[in-house]
Length: 288
Ligand SMILES: [Zn+2]
Image (cartoon, rainbow, N blue to C red; front, top):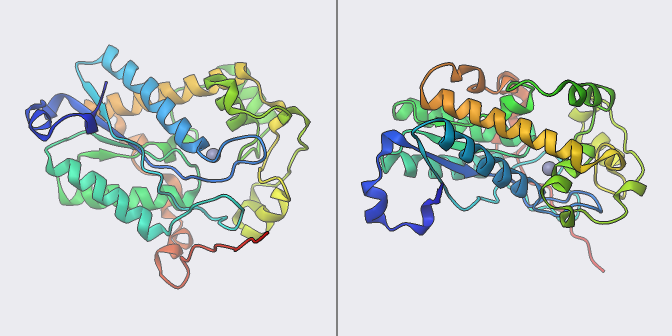
């Protein structure tokens, strides 16, 4: 795998585009509680992409390339201190610009890793992918929406059981804390085991106010105290294998369709953010 941005334009022109895959991560700089860094989603996206690229290169004749990550993303909860979010329109424009540019260079397998599970972000990225795939021949895939929905390689049984017992872990809870612990325990602040659970139901996740009130003074939704690097290794491996599966199927243009369309895309109210009057990013000034 190679960093595409370190090549010259002459070198890129000579690449065999039929046998290449290009990865681009899009995720936010965003608060992740008292215990995880703002770049959590970017770190996850890069780690999972690199793991998937390794698998793809060992299981096919493809060469993988990646771009520096784009810290551009949309989210439904903007007000929390520390977050840098953008409108859905901006996320769409950036995704469109990146993919369209790569398409114009001749790349035919462009993978956007939107490693931030907020539906507003995933819909904005997918809208760009759909538009490009209509404009050019099929050339782009954003598989994270469907992978977050549970599509992908089957999890180990014990992980599935644990996940069912401790669901509603949406943001900086045991899932993300475990994931980062397994990458490098120094990403996670000491004391995560002492943090109280923040409880929210599936249904209440549609309300920004209810999310904010569950986040309280902490900023996470779930149970960081349950995290372990062993869980994180399993979660990361499953995500890497799922991305590799999606990309290999896309590369071979065979069976990739189940990763193609994010199932929440069809919920029209989630597109309301594209209308300027509703799609503002709500930033709150904090002084002192
Ligand atoms: Zn996150």
